[in-house]
Length: 244
Length: 328
Image (tube, rainbow over all chains, first blue to last red; front, side, top):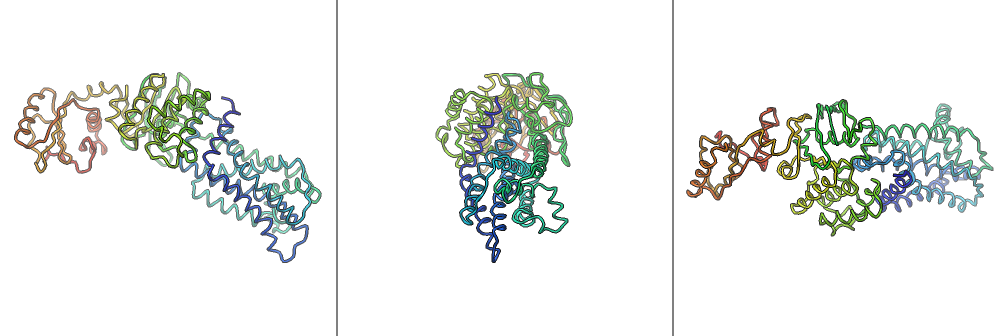
């Protein structure tokens, strides 16, 4: 059977399976983005245009990352516990196609939130964003890396542990990652960790493709992300094809 | 078609679930895998369909090594797992149809076959109802249909009759036979020995991960005993009668007493039972050849061990208040 046909059928399967939750998840993702753009600035008594731009361009990245590292492990853990993951593994579908179909559904869930975050930012703060076509590979790299990490976490760990780790990750991403603020505000040791972790690079590629006039795009974060993406994809591929 | 040789699987920090399992099933055959809970039945079939990797041994389908090539196993096998397949959000018709197409079936064929299965299993009433609102039995029949809609060369059915009502069980068995008639080798995992006897062509009994006996139901019954079973239904309040010499084993459950006796004693046993009924001690009695279940219990009793001891003392209905009246 053709790979494309399996891919389309799997998307239909997952969409039907989750049809009652999909609209809700889309709304939650959008609310989340709205909260970062509109709620975060309330932390500051007075806010300068640079900080506003940082927050506004950080929100889409945070929305994408939390989807992959928090929502995906929870969804996959659930599927594993109720037995649908094992059942899908008995069907004659390449594992990679299964993973890509799931990622497509997740992308469909998170994209409206990302667009909403950008529109809200532009409206609330009267920002003028300069969208680069590189936003497409930037979003894909972020989604592929975070969702495959989330997938691997949920596949390897028991449900409660996977949920716990995803909670820890969300705190780390929201509070201790240079997405809503520049990395120079972090203590030196944490900044150097973030120089090799993919989170900061995710923020940079999204920010650079949204407001390249203020945050010039460089090759380095794309290259780092590509390495992480390849690594997480490989690990997830191994995890998925592993037999107990 | 399916050949399993010396299959061994030990779980990490767990028991040896399969210990040198060897069996084979031909196209057109329904092969029953019987055994008590934890005997290693599900572990065995999960290795056949490529979900688990054996520690040792070989599995081939049409001569193809599926341990080395699990993707071939996924194409060649369709499975109804023991656990319910969650289909919340989908209707049975959608779920069966999508699996049929994911298994490579053509849209028109799958649609027709889905409708046929739904009709044959008499679940049309629920065909367009969301999976979340289905009863356990209907879900089970939907899972079966998902394995049967575009069947593999090998079709694995793990406890297909669980939760299914008696009328639809019969419809289900007809469809199981139909799958074999289509040319599939059907591997039927069950602990329901009574039903298996009527439905399987060959069977293997698993105990502690080993195949302890294999053959057709008739061969198995022949190899173990040519005994008869006499079932006595006591009048309410009656104590069981003293057992005559020819009785080899007797077990009481409530007001039923199941007595095993040699074939040669048939007429004597009938006379004895008729006498008891005349005296008003029995409501009724029946005399019949030993069932596969009697054989199953007998075999486990022969090989010894804890399970065997429990089983040998446990009659047909497996009720806990069983009492061996001959010993008393």
